[in-house]
Amino acid sequence: MIYGDRIRLRAVEREDLPTFKKWINDPEVRQGLGVYLPLSSEDEEEWFEGVRKHPPDERNLVIEVRQPDELSIPPGELASPPELEPSETTWRMIGGCSFFKLDGRNRSAEFGIMIGDKNYWNHGYGTEAVRLLVKHGFNTLNLNRIYLRVLENNPRAIRAYEKVGFIHEGRQRQAEYKDGGYLDLLVMSFLKDEF
Amino acid sequence: MIISEHVRFRGIERADIPKFVEWLNDPEVLAGILIHYPISQADEEGWFDRMLVRPTDERVMGIEVKEPADQGEVSTWKLIGTCAFDHIDWRVHAAEFGIMIGDKSCWNKGYGTDAVRLLVQHGFNILNLNRIFLHVFDTNPRAIRAYEKAGFTLEVRERQAEYKNGRYIDVLLMSILKEEFRRMREGL
Image (tube, rainbow over the protein chains, first blue to last red):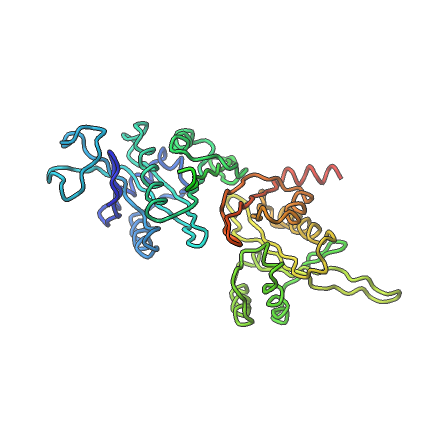
């Protein structure tokens, strides 16, 4: 488990699949994703089996938020290690993220992230999850370059990446097609030096 | 066969493999491409077999140039490199391509630029693509210049995206869109 301030990243479980299916079929959520076909439970099962075959560092992770009602630690203070956690602490799954195209020789990786639970949009959870993933990438996976691609019409995500410290590298022109028109994909990156 | 005045593309043959092995083991050729390990004849035969089962529009093509013919002789064509589209996305109508001029005696003569122009023309006019892009090391000014001449625009500088000779180098992403290709044609 990878712990942040208000959130943690854990491995995906089979029980998570219905939640993922619900999110990925939500038109508002998929605005920012590369998915455009309806997704079935069978598709999700297949995806899950696929994830388990990924190299360990490229497996998808679930983003969870510590539930405020059970919160025994003042907000802003670091989460206690799991073994010291009060047993009644509960966590709520709000999204997923993962590295992919991890290149061991070039020490670079791309990542993707989704906050599927819309109640948790615009509260800084996405930014915090990206920060935690980046820290994991540099401090544990020993990456040198972390990058991402984001649709030009997703200012909320772009702002989050900027806040974390990602730099705009450029714009892949007309690299995606959505709702009857071409869209640009922005490429952003973060180097170990900058971290 | 895809033919222009000085350059043509043909399907590659098993008999071309020794040539490829020679090129792909040349350090000067390797400086511009993604391979960093010695390539054997057996490696290339495996590559050739895998290539045959790729989608037809993504098969590797041999680049040939017309050799000057003596008077009364029929001109012959000489294999100088290879190129191919890759990752063709038929929904977005976008594709990447790669190109190599392996025959160093043919460097700096504009053949690379001619080949890129021909491939781009094939991509827009036959394959009906909307976007054609490529990756190039920023340490390869000769290639970058050729792409610029063929009408490509630099769109992304991927910082420290490749490690070569003891240091990280940037990788440039360049592209050309159908509307730009059309405008270029009209300007000619």
